[in-house]
Length: 58
View 1 (cartoon, rainbow, N blue to C red):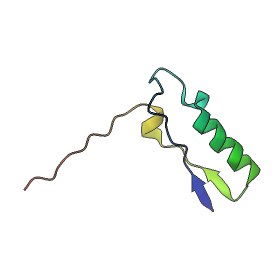
View 2 (view 1 turned 90 degrees about the vertical axis):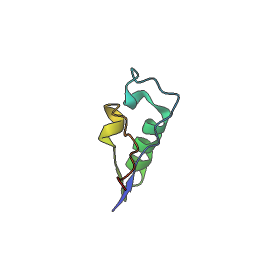
View 3 (view 1 turned 30 degrees about the vertical axis):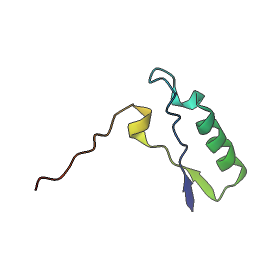
C-alpha cells in the first residue's frame, strides 16, 4: 500500500476549505483511479497549525 499526500498550495487562504483545493481534488481522483494508492491527509495542514522550526539547545 502506498500513500499519496496532496501538496497544500501556499496561496490558499486559511479560510478556504482544504477540500476545495485543486491539489486535494487531484489526489482524491488519483487514489480513486488507482486502488494501490491511499489518500494521506496531514491534519496539521487541515486545521492550519503552523509548525515552528526550533533549534535544539546547545
